[in-house]
Image 1: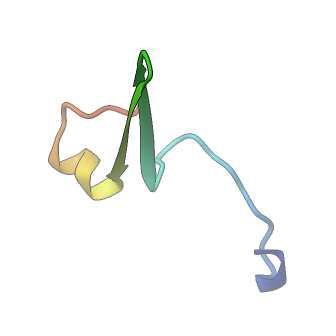
Image 2: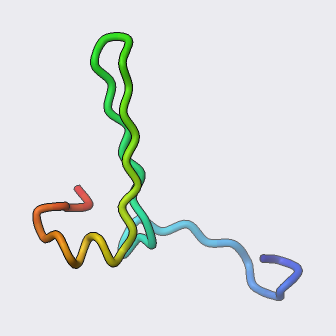
Length: 47
């Protein structure tokens, strides 16, 4: 982003996407929720 004239920024409020990793023993699961998904399914929360 620096070449575009804007410094990079990390913020944890209002994310574009949420990545969830769950592990149980030697098993793991991965989920990716986009902002549209978070609005469509209100039971998904960013906390």
